[in-house]
Length: 295
Image (tube, rainbow, N blue to C red; front, side, top):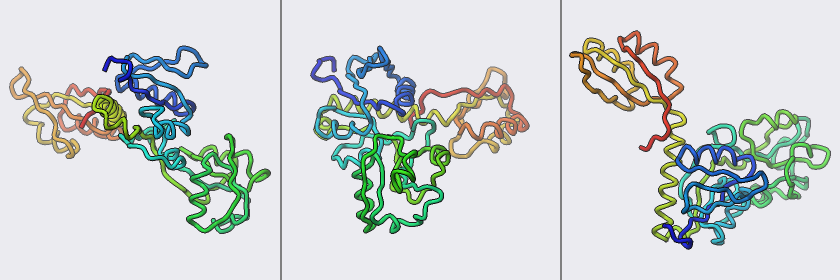
C-alpha cells in the first residue's frame, strides 16, 4: 500500500478527544504528531496514512461523502449527522476515562421544568440540533432548538430554558448548578469507514489492522500481567486464589518441584489478590504493565 492513491485518508478528532486519541494510537503502534499548534495535518510514522484533524462533529459527513476514507468520532455525532457509514469498531475511551459519555438534556436546579412535557414551547441550546429535534419529536414535544457554539452551561437560565450537552463525569453540570432531566443517548468513540472504501481490499485490511491494535491497546489499559514462582506443595492453594476466568500458564523451573506461573488479571483486583497469593505460598511475585491484549 505504498502508492499515493492507496493512502488511507483518516480523520482524527480535534479538541477535547485529540490528546486521548493520539495517546491510544501511540500505544497501538502509530505515532502521530502535530508539527505546530496551528497545523491540521498531523504527521504519522506510517506512510500509508494521511491524517487530518477535524472537529468530531464534521467527521461523519466527510466519511459518508468519501472525502475521508475513515475517521474516529463519537457515536453521538454519527447519530446527530444521521449518516450512512460502516462502523469498523467501537472504541471504549473518552477524554478523561474509559467510560461512555452521555448526551443529556439539562435544566437549572431551580427551574420549574420537571418533565419533557414542560419543555413545550421552550428554548433549548445545543450543538446536537438534529439529534435533539428528533428526540423531542419522538416524545411529542415542540420546542425551539437553537445551535450553540459551545459553553451551553452558562446560558441557563438567563438565555435559554434548557440545554442538550455531552457529559463524561457530570462535574461541569454540577458546577453550573444544573440537573439532568433526560438522557438522550449513551455514546462511545467509533472508528468508521466510507462504505465504498470498506469494499476495497487493501484499505479494508489497513482499517482492520488499525481496529485490532487499537482495541488491543484499550483491553490492555484495564489489565496487568502477573508472574510468580510456586512450589508443587503450594500450587493448589495459589491456583484456587487466582481468578477462574483464565487458567494460568505453568512452566517448570530448574529447581525441581517449582514452577513459574503467569496470568493476566484485572488491575483493580491486583491490590487484594497479590497479598492473598503471597499468603498461599507464591514467591517472587511480579506485576507488570501490558501494552496490547489481543483476544
